[in-house]
Structures are given as structure tokens and as C-alpha cells.
Length: 354
Ligand code: DP6
Image (cartoon, rainbow, N blue to C red; front, side, top):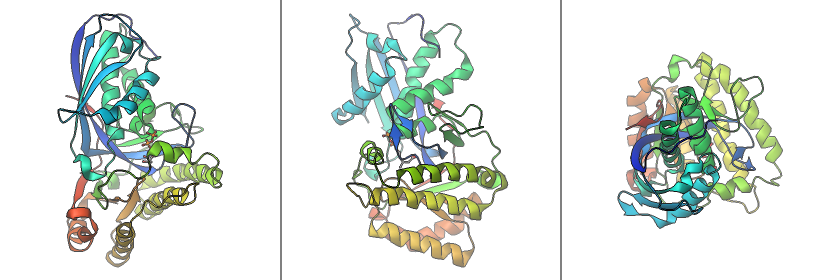
């Protein structure tokens, strides 16, 4: 990949908005420097996003130290420092100019930060895009087609799932035999055709627990090392990825539901059987799942759920069922959400420069 060849400016800034994403086939377990144990696939979201302004100013002396300030909604956020320091250190070999600058990272999320919705995917993607943009601006002969790849590669170093927040509507991360361009190093737009049934697909995020994550993903991924079911899980995820291709092409929503829900429950099964073990679902998570199953059976509407490493429930459904699903949420599910809160989102098309 290209490296910046000449640093022409002493200061400047750029702004990127990167969306969140929801994995259909989950990444859980990693090796070496942020490489996935199995391939994963996600819907890019639209409304849930992070906007980041990166301002850079050349340091008097190019020391080795990484130097930055970080603000969320204009307020300094020192607790983000370790994660961003790790990210910038990992990115340094690929963007040597990092050590020449002092950065100010000003970030804001479209969703409330106390929502229990992870902002690391959208946040790291937005920051990676700003850095990739600096490099692009300063590199002579930069190949435009490399930009998304480089941004995704960098985002991965910050948070694995962030590498799936550059493009949309469907992003694959991880090497799949026979799929050209697929890589463990970055996400790519899923190359197979997507059936029109998935256009405008909805994701309503029911906020069951708005508290901070009980188990950090880094710790959770680590627990897959030596996990008694790890090998079977990685094989299952690869099989799901193989199976979901034709399902996305044909629009078979029954098969889609089965894969997506099995993925969510397998992810939680891994956490429930690791050492130490965790239970991240709440009673309300299970109440919602049961009601979703009942609704699907009785109404014949292909509403399905998925989960991240937490108690919140993502409801996935076709756009044209929005009214009926919303009525169901209002009538039956909202009482299981903390303070009755949920976020309405839909499939999106990737990050944007602002
Ligand atoms: C359950 O990407 O947050 O959401 O690489 O340690 O930052 P790190 O982990 P992270 O893990 C996401 C796990 C997941 C599943 C998924 O998004 O694929």
C-alpha cells in the first residue's frame, strides 16, 4: 500500500461521518494483531453514526510520542485515551507521519452515549477515514481505488468490527477461499448480488440495558482462546457465511432468519461457556425474543432478531412491514426497553466525507 511521500502542510483538518454496522455473521475470536478467527458479514447502518473532525498541527520536533487530545461533544474524554493510543501506535508503521503531528480528535455520535450502543465501530472507522484522507491528500500518484481498503485496514487496527463501517450496504471481512479480494486485513463490499427484499431493510435497536458493556469485546475475544467449543464455532461461522450468500441473493427470508438468529445465540452461547463465563442477556432480552418468535409465527411477518455482546436486541425486517412491526413494538416490546427507548435505523451505504 502507498505511503505518504511528502508532508506539504503544517496544519489542517478533515471531517468524516462513519456509520455503525450490525453483524449477521459474527466476529468473535481474534489472533495476532486484530485478525479474525472467522469471516464475518454485516449490514451497514445509516442513522447510528459517529462524526469526527481530525485537526492536525505539525510538532516542533518529530518525537516518537503519539500526541493527541480527544473530545466527545466538545468535552475532553480521557477514558478514550488508551484505546486511541493503541490504535495510533498500531497505525504508525503504515502512516509514519502520525509521529510528526499533534492531533485533536473531536467526535460526536448520532445516538446518545448512554444508550449501551457501542460506538467503537463507527468511532474508529471515522478516525481511520480522517487519517487515510490525510495520506491520500499528500501522496502523489495515490490510487483512488485503494482508499476504502486502506481506511478499512486502519479501522481494523482500532476495532475489528470498525473495518466493516467504511462501505455498505453489506460488508464482508475475512478471507473466504474462492472469493476474490476477500481478506483478513480489511472489509470489502460484499460482491454477490443482494435481493431487492433487503433494500431499505430495517434495524430497530431495542435498548434493554443502556449501561456500559459488562465485558469489553477485547476481553471477550480473548476468552475464545482455549475455549472448549472454539474450533466448532469458527467452523460454524464459516459455514453460515457460505450459506448466507445464496440466501441474500434469493431473498429467502426464512433461511435468512434462521442463520441470523442462530449466529446471535451462538455468540451468547460462547460467552456463557467461556472461562470465566458471562450472561449478557437480561430477562427482558429473553422476553423480547419470545415475543418476536410468537409474532413471527402468528403474523407470518419475517421479523428476526440479532444481538451484539450485550442485552440490547436488534430487530431486522423488510421496509414494507415497518408499520406493522412498529405497532408491535409500541404495543408489546417497548415496556421491556429501558426508559421505553429504542433507535430506528436501516441499512446504509457507508461513510461520507463532510
Ligand atoms: C459481538 O470489533 O468490538 O459485535 O476488535 O476487540 O474492538 P475489537 O472487537 P469488536 O467486536 C465486535 C464483536 C461483535 C460481533 C461483530 O460485530 O462481528
